[in-house]
Length: 434
Image 1 (tube, helix red, strand yellow):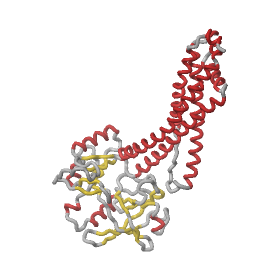
Image 2 (tube, rainbow, N blue to C red):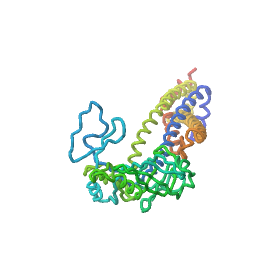
Image 3 (spheres, rainbow, N blue to C red):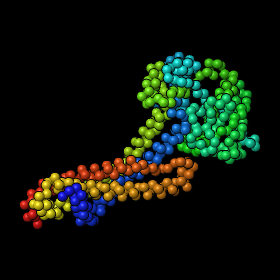
Image 4 (tube, rainbow, N blue to C red):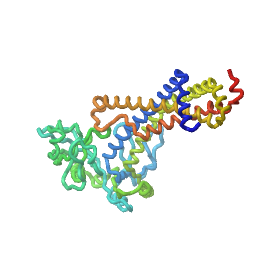
């Protein structure tokens, strides 16, 4: 018997007991479908988040903070107080609740970071607190504004991201703003809007800015507008008027850039240089990894349900093939008597097990793809319609192949015991079996 004959014989023998084999395939199908769906959700969400996080900043930007050795996070009521360092001031980040103490930096830190080799530029990140943005008919609306670092050309509903090299004031607004300001997402592009801001003396000033783009609604920062460097600097200068110079020049974060062609190893080396000087630098990729780690943990938990189904299916394969070996004892004896080697008999039953695994996994993957398409179609018109570009379930070919091959391997392992038992049958005793 060559390999082709073994496959044909195994496939024809597989359905001698249709009900038994069908139940085993259904168990494998459920496991394969569950694993494919959970991984599809993980891939879809990670792909979308990857795109959205990429919109928040260029890949060659480091977000730098002073390393707080005494306080790595929120303190509980039972935690001992951190030691006081007179050289470092702190600010409470995170609003109400325990929050997190973040060390404040000054222009001295900015100079230190600029002097580090391979840091091409560095700017202080100031918190902007504008009062309002004015509509075309004179109505005023609250505005949450951040200074943008890096590119925002992707993820725009209309127009483009702000240009930090442009000396003119520029702003992009969330997709919920144009209608309130008296425009639509296209007509607002190029329009001038008025932004109000109050200084430390209580006097309100106004600044004009040109709208360059409207941001797509996404899972991150749906209500945040972005300013280019020129607008951010002008707004901060106005709001800090009247403050002591020492306070006006304090900030919690520095955004620094490095060569865009840096490899992962070079980026790590640069982060290590920052660490030696007492700073912590994170890229967008580092932030992605933190979020994706949490998503992966959730997906693994859901995958466990699929694994449980596959374990049940494995016992089904063992039972199916053991019964098959028992029922085909005489046939095995005859094959041995005609010169078929134990290795060929082992291969015959192993192939049968793998075919059961293949059928179950393929059907399970097909069902998962159909369910995924239905969920994506329904979601696009209902619960995710406000998030353009989000496919809740995505099934890459590589993931599908891994699921199928993995299940076939599990089926092979499950079929090993029956296959060994069949290969060790004594031909004389097998021919006498009734």
